[in-house]
Amino acid sequence: MQASADFRQEREELDAILGSGILSRAPNLEHLLTYVCARYFEGAAEQIKEYNIAVDALGRSPDFDQKRDSIVRVEAHRLRKRLRAYYDAEGADHPIRIDIPPGQYAPQFLPAGSLLPSLGTETLVSQADAANGAPAPPTHNNQQIHNQQIHNQQIHQQMREEPEPQLPALVPEAVGRVIPAVSPKPGYNGRHAAVTLGLLLISGAGAVAIWRGPEKKLDKSPVLPPPPVTAGVNPVEVRILAGRQNGDYTDRLGRVWQSDRYFHGGWVFEAHDHPIFGTREPRIYQGRREGAFSYDIPLAPGVYELRLHFAETLFGENNVAGGGESSRVFSVSINGKEALHEFDVASEAGPSTADIRAFKDISPASDGKLHLAFAPTSNPPLLCAIEIIPGIPGKLRPIRMVALDRVYVDPHGRSWEPDRYARGGLLIARATPVEGTADPELFRGERFGNLRYVIPVPPGRYGVTLYFAELWFGPDTPGGGGVGSRIFDILVNGVAMRRGFDVYKEAHGAARSITWSAHRLEPDAQG
Image (cartoon, rainbow, N blue to C red; front, side, top):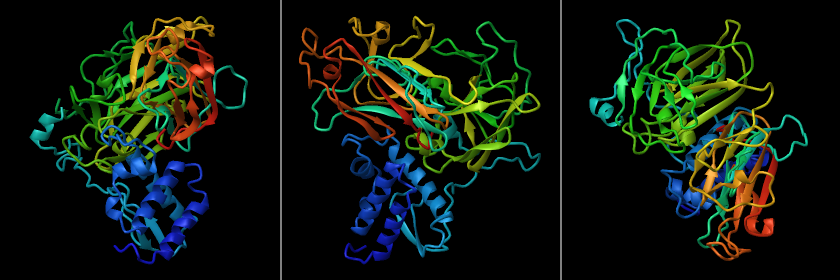
């Protein structure tokens, strides 16, 4: 391609899209589309690579690792969907259209009426036995089968503007996740952001709160009656490990995940010892139910929150089947209504990475059961776990986290979960007493480094409060220094909300608490 080529019509189409407003609330998508088109116009389409996009267009640092950070794949998948929606509506009569085919990032400029590839174009794995119509496991070869085996944060959903202390807000386009992040200020040498986590969403030295090769097992068993409820199971809460056949599992919070039940169809895969990123509970994601399957879960009348847990341990880089984005695409319905359309775990979270989708205002159907159905588009659907807890009509229960390895119950009887949802950084305990707070126990630990939190929330408006205390820099502290010793930015879903944040300066000294809040925030399209 010649850089001197006349791209007048193509440039006009790009300008039309940027001017339409479809990307106005998604700056990452706007940056991505602008970058790939600019490189195309310059005759440098061969340089449109994942690393270059991450660093040049999306602001990632030069040490960006695409094996650990899936932002480019996620944003490209979102952009493809947004472009398709645009040309189905406002751009339907345009003479040319911009498309970014699955599996690449270089744009194509196609004449109107061109046939576009599906966003899930991989071949379906055979799922039916020709003799009896029963589900059959995918035909992976035997070798593949053998080898796959901030102190405090608090986030709450705001249904209306209420003066609730220290509880800010977040909001998604569809089911999305809120991704608060703290990163060292550009050009700042060697001193990383610290978050004392106490989640009512995220914190700096404190807390956050938001209000082996797989062993494939063909499962031909009918739905079995559940075993008797044990003393460790809360009968109001339901946690099921999809595909787990022998016994229950108790996680580090003491919650009991029951063996698989209430299912119809599908088969079981187990991937013992397979590394799972983005979680401190890898065992939840090392087994799965796969195929065309459904669940009919009996529930008492009421309103619940539902969380579905996924991890792609078959497809994707360093996994046995290779492939990646678009290798497995499927839909999920709840009580007969589609809740996830063309869902692609590898695209949205990356391979071997925990991915959680959250839903609120869930109730059983008229027969007293919650019906979940998983239907393939490209290769069989998967599911790792189901989590159902009592909910609050119209809003999400507050999420509170503290940067510790244990649960903390504050003087008001509120429970703060141990640190979770973190990507990057290190978690350490702190013994230094913190002043300026009614609850210094929230500041007994911190996560520090170049870090972010990926917190799954359903659509709605949310607030986030981050709790900080500088316990390393300052007079008479191990790090010495003071003002200017640690400076970082706070970003939510890639958008900088606070630049040049200096905990020591803002709190007027070391070992002093300070909070930062943001309101009316929206989760991204990945929930």
